[in-house]
Image 1 (cartoon, helix red, strand yellow):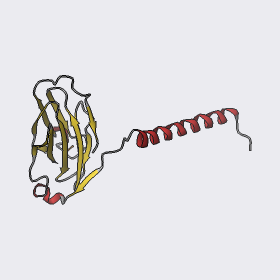
Image 2 (image 1 turned 180 degrees about the vertical axis):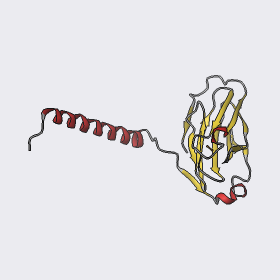
Image 3 (image 1 turned 120 degrees about the vertical axis):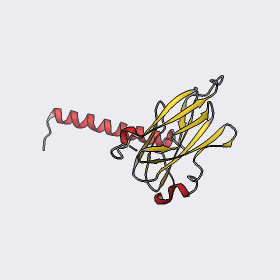
Image 4 (image 1 turned 45 degrees about the horizontal axis):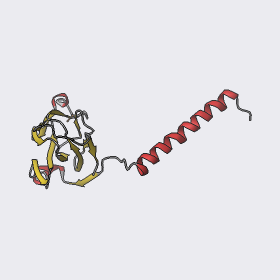
Length: 170
Ligand code: CUA
């Protein structure tokens, strides 16, 4: 069978694009170590508030300039609704849902995970500037979805020579 010239050209462009995208994916995964936020454990969603680590909600220092922020999402709020973290510190967010699937996105950061009932989600971030960030539920979770938001208040002076704003998976 003889293919039309244009068909060959389009097939060629399609093939090159496919190979380039595959290459980019392999490079990002193996070369740059990028990967999706992993499942950080499992709990019984019916007993979310009694299960470690969600039996101690809020911000706890876990090391030098390092904090853990433990948060539960439920219809239609984040618990606790507001947390305070120091500027320049690494904050490890550990979150889950007590009922249905919720989103967990901290505006102006790359922290963006899904809260799935029974699964523990983890993400880390270092806030390099003081200020306020809204924690947004960005998965439709019911009639009050649009009202579901929390607040993250970053306290303290902007550190000198602070590192680049960024998130790292862990
Ligand atoms: Cu929770 Cu939308």
